[in-house]
Amino acid sequence: MKMRIPLIVLSLGIALFLSHYVGLVWNDSAKNVSYMLFMVALIFAFEKTKISEKKVNVFAGIGVVIVGLLFEIVTEPKDWSYLLGVLT
Image (cartoon, rainbow, N blue to C red):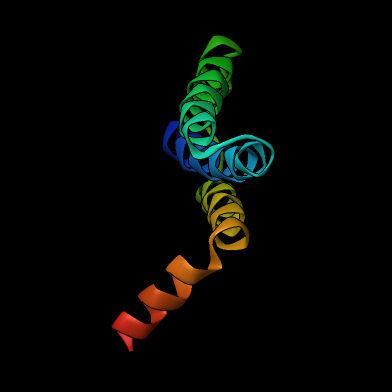
């Protein structure tokens, strides 16, 4: 399994986490712009360093995806509680 998709999920989680704190310091428009910048910068860094081309065990890829989802859960717990409410 290549690391490309798990790293994209991780990038989404980290970008959301970092842009949330940018939004606390500045306004919401800065938060939206910083989300895109963080996401593009992380994906670009992963592609440029060829980390996304590495082949790893499936469980390592699943672990990276879980870490990305944990970043999202920590940043926006209301979204996850809503999702769990809909699923149950």
